[in-house]
Structures are given as C-alpha cells and as structure tokens.
Length: 221
Image (cartoon, rainbow, N blue to C red; front, top):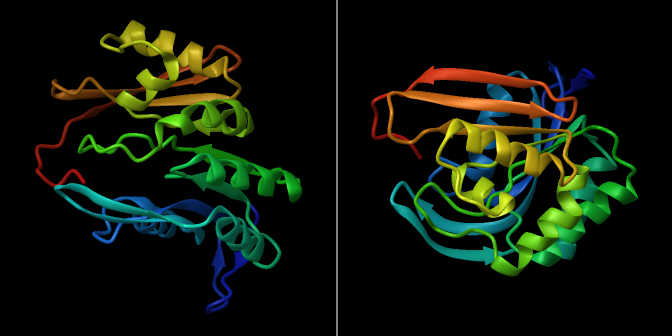
C-alpha cells in the first residue's frame, strides 16, 4: 500500500482506508470497530457515516439513515484531500445510499481495492438493510467489489439457498462470484462446533480454507 502521512500528527501509515458504514454507539461493530481494526493493522482510517444506530451487545433498537447526498459529500471530502488506497463498505441501509456510494466511486474513477461487507443481518438477527435494497447491492455494488465478506444469513440471501454444509459454502461462493466480485470470503461456519472454517474463493478457481478454534466467550459483539 501507499504510505501516507497522518494529517493529525505526521506519522507514516501503511495505507489509507475509507470506511463507508453505520455507527455503533457500543463500539462493537460498524464504523467504530473498523477504525479500531484498521488502526491496529497500522493503517489510517477515514470514514463516511451512512446511518446512526441505537444498539449494544443485546441488539439493534433503532436506525436513523444519513441522507445519501450527505454520504456522497463525506466521500468527496475524503477522496479530494486525504485520499484512499482502499474502500470498505458496511451498512448501506437503503437504495439511495448504495447508488450514491457506487456513483461516487465511479466519479472519482477509484482504482483501489473495494471490500464489501454486505451488511444485511446483524449477529443478533436484526435486519440492517431494507429488503428492496438487496437487488441494488447485487446489481450495483457487487460488480465493483474486490472481495465480499458475507456472514451465513447474508450469503444465503445473496445466493438464494440455505447453507448447511461445506459443499453448500462452495456452491454459494460460486454463485456469489457469478455476481461480479473478484473474490468471496465466507466466514465462520459452522455455528455449532468447536472449529470454525472460513473459505476464500476467487475467480480463478482457487479455494483457501482458514480454520480456527472457537473462543469460549460471551463477548461476541
């Protein structure tokens, strides 16, 4: 990644990441979690906030969308000044926001990596994307993605069938690849065993399994 000078203190970082996502006041997900992750990896995080949520470790109780033109203006403010080596999208919530994000990327002829977390369903089961916006995610955003990172419920919605086996993950991955992204990272399956499996599938047919032991903790938000 391109090294960049942090506007705040002049420190050098490995890369500039523009996160376009919703805010989680409890700090466990959304913009707040992304900033922590990017910073821990030595990058520089910039943000465009798409929605304000009322949530904590127990669930989501309210969502207030940010106007799509305001989201676009946040992106413009970052891209015309600090710049970005990569973009990561999270909760986009509605059709207008999805279209504004894609139009902004196109307007700036953005050539960096685009990581799409198709935030539809929270771990708590709360829906974070309006149902009518799913088709817009598929038709507008997925073709721009370098990699998409759906959880199990999201992969099932996008693929159109239930996923209950490793073979199902592979079939879903192939289905998602046919929608345009260069790679699909299917995370954290299965939900009921001590071991978790993530599978990275790419357009060239490569499949990489990443296995991990499940941590016994209640702090999973």
